[in-house]
Amino acid sequence: MSLWKKGRIVDIRHVEGKMEVEEYIYTPGIAGLELAKALIEGKILGVKCDGKVYIPAKTFCPDFTRGELVEVEGSWTIETYTIIYEDMYGRKLEKPQIIALLKLENVEGGLIHYVNVDPKTIRVGLKVKPVFKPREERKGLLTDIIYFTVEH
Amino acid sequence: MRVAVIGVGWYGFKPSVPELSFREMMFEAAVRAYSDANIDPRRDVDAFISCQEDFWEGVAISDEFAPEPIGGVLRPTMTITGDGLQCIGQAYAMIKTGAFETIVVEAHAKPSDILSIQEIYELALDPQLRVLNFGNPLFQAGLDAVAYMRRSGARREHLALVAYKNKNRGLLNPRASHAAPVRLEDIMESGTVIYPMSRYEIAEFTDVAINIVLASESKAKGYTDKPAWIDGVGWATELGSGAIEWHSWGRMPSMKLAAQMAYKQAGIESPLKQVDFAEVEDRFSYMELLTLEELGLGGLEGVPRLLESGYYDVKGGLPVNPSSGSLSLGASLEATGLSRLLEAILQLRGEAGGVQLSDARKAIVASWRGPPTYTSAVVIVSSS
Image (cartoon, rainbow over all chains, first blue to last red; front, side):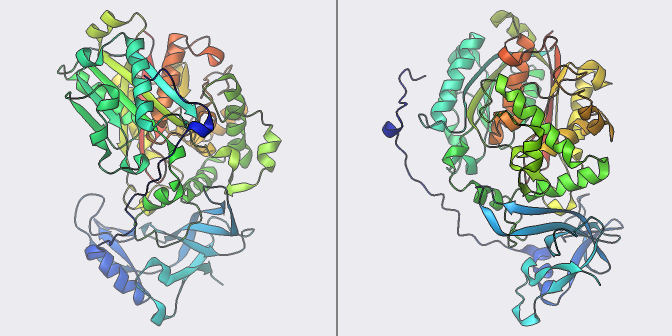
């Protein structure tokens, strides 16, 4: 234990540092690659495990079996949501960001994504659908879906 | 054979500790804990366990830095990337084997050093998900809060009431740097940060190092006349830890599983009747309510009603977070769980000062590793 600690703020020094982790490539793997190809086609993949289908698709199932990748379709609803007004540093966002867990009927899990809806009208159970970017702009990323929008 | 806590030490509990590096903070906390336990770490300790995570330290392979500040050089020292209570679980199990008699557990946090803390939280998300811009990487807490409210019937006021209780309570605890005399209206009228929560309902960060010395029953008696006893420890990681979309929204199965494991060891069948107080997860307001439900301390729909009635106040049937919780003490990365265990031990010893309860013999301590994890740990401690 140090007996004499400096308390006067101007006597305290900092050493600047940077963690060299900003450059990275992530191998998408078997499921990731199929998922990317499907997104470019405007499709969403799930993984079939022991009778249940989960999204997003992984190669492996919760019960440690290997799953079968399958295309999922159907009616999407908002299972839960939040609206982000400020970041962790207390800075206000230019526009509140609506984030939701979108659930597909009869499928476990779901997708976390933006919802394009008036914050005043958002609610759990709202029926929504994904809006994809034009095909030529898709890159096989989740951002190939622009957002989910209310179904009319 | 029982396991005792024979010494505790800490340094910090401030939004920033500019005078010391985090390793010096570990050293300060260790010296205090070993003095409290009357032990020489170079002679009397069989193993050292540190709960830490490279990204919080700002160095890679940070476990190599663990032994020296806590007296563990050339002694069995290990690190666990998890909340401090997970280290307590490991130490408890090791002492129970009979191969270890005295074990030091430490965890520390210096979030004030981390200039890019938001970016580190973002980096903890699945790379495939990270392409989206969430605005705030703690968004999961909002998703869980909305789902919890819908399921339990808790209203916005209930969440605000948690912050009101804990923020004001902290005024009596000198370690509670984030305490504030707030009115319920201040919280209700405050702007939303992560819907449905205001700034008052999201714990700020705190720098701290905490060191806790555990010993077997036979050893403990030789060192201290005021041991606290660990009656049970449980921990769990739930489905949804690798694909958060698979999480059970508005629930915390890991907390429930951790509690079941700890209760079984501690012989607890009806926790509401068998414990005197609880130090539970509250780094977001809704988490205090959800945790109480998963711990079986109120039941579904019971928790919001009991909160309203004052049942969880210090003078109620079950004081919850008499320390003032993380909303006042602050969240301390992997040291958060240990900060709550420290408060419970001080209560059991009658050394909690301004927040001392009159009847504090047995407690539940429950911690979550924080977003984006779905890992929880529960410890049962008693004074006799």
